[in-house]
Length: 206
Ligand SMILES: Nc1ncnc2c1ncn2[C@@H]1O[C@H](COP(=O)(O)OP(=O)(O)OP(=O)(O)O)[C@@H](O)[C@H]1O
Ligand SMILES: [Mg+2]
Image (cartoon, rainbow, N blue to C red; front, side, top):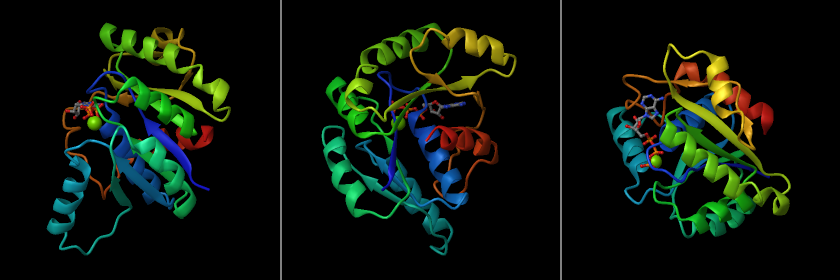
């Protein structure tokens, strides 16, 4: 049965969508059967996919992108997981996900990934998020809470990253996503090559 990886955070703009799409495209290019679910009510990724297929004259394929909503997605996942053939379902949760929505996602996911930068504000919110969600592991014993250091400046060494995140009751991934200038140009069809080690480290934990 498919494993569920959900990108979550209490704060908007931490990199959920950017990392969800990069993980999905990378896993797809590695040969995994991937389903991506977006809960952004603008359906950004579905729109991007349509534009990309249009530009590529629809000759390309890709993994399926389903739309859902914050208040429904956790309930829908139970059915989706049983009726679909994919190996991995990736959920890009919404910027305005409610606390109830977050908790429900923790109960149905195998992994939740919290992307965070090292700014004081992001770190505080990440710390609170992990503290509040950690008890979900007592109910969902398979749940792993992962921290993905995102937007890490090139001059920051890995020791500083680990020190900043060491008090979190979660697994800090041994990889970082650098601060990029043109990260906005993500694709639903082409994987970013540098995402390979990140995908690999997430697969190792799955
Ligand atoms: N590693 C990075 N380097 C540079 N820019 C980044 C990086 N990660 C994310 N961004 C930028 O930060 C902004 C927010 O990222 P993204 O949309 O992925 O966050 P989000 O958590 O999905 O936001 P929301 O909560 O609104 O859904 C985007 O403009 C994105 O391009
Ligand atoms: Mg988003």
